[in-house]
Length: 116
Image (spheres, helix red, strand yellow):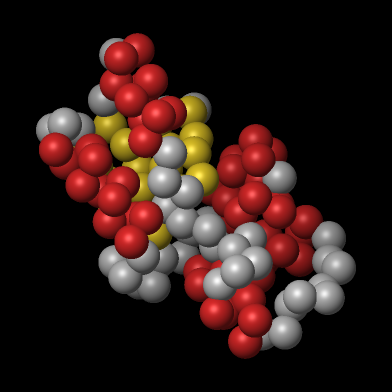
């Protein structure tokens, strides 16, 4: 099993995901979104499964700072903006092959572990 975790080092849920997989000796590829943006194609995978509203952290400081509370934009605009502004993403984004999660979802991660 090999997982890819997208997030930031300061995010407590991202640290929780990294710790969860590390404790279980799962190979982790961590992508720090402050250093390298997720590609629009990668983000599109998550949007197709969860929808744009799930990916946008509407409670986050960056969302408020950018004044997006009343923004009604299309998915294409959001994909481009999320790639440029990782602070708008709800993290971690975790990918295990074709399986995806948004946020800390230890129950789902355990299911992945049991399936391998």
